[in-house]
Length: 238
Image (cartoon, rainbow, N blue to C red; front, side):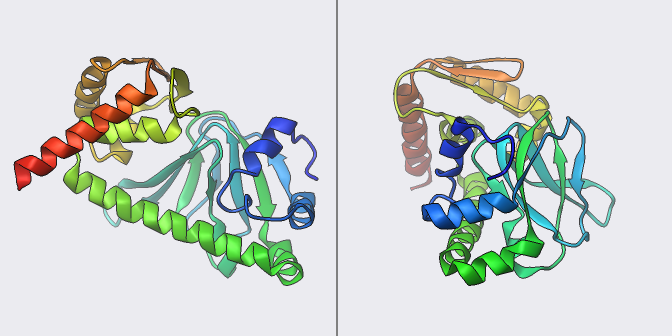
């Protein structure tokens, strides 16, 4: 098992899409190849076009994946946080990273080198199926994100984003956000000023944001707000 993993880390790993379905033997073997990394805010993990030498599971912190457009601008493809994996599709195909990855906060990552990955898949085909399932989940997430940008209000997008991060199904909770609010705005398809208006709107339903911490005072109330907003949007378009 990778040095530096805690019991909480193992619990988190078992809930990930890519590793959660593995049996104990397969997971133990895979973890023996892994390394815990602690990159700092602003550190680049890999660059678009580099050989896909690893995939990652986020144990703590925030990572952004982005591409540089022809015009030289940065286009954020996705942001990942605790309990999420990224770069597995590139590692699985032994290709090149199609995007670049940068830490937007200090982070703890579990890195799985791809040079041992195919040996592990041959030993345990269930790992290959888990990686395909995780890749499919990312694809569905991107499709949903496109639908969300077209059909949801700014407050809806932010509410759904926070609900996805909430560690509980009911009651109150506090979640950590990336330090750069512009990153969240870009991820949700909003301008920073639109994000500020969405935060103010969610304050009416018991969500307070202070710097990089968001407190949801009642998860059910926030979920109900999201559902009601969606119903109103659908009614207005019918």
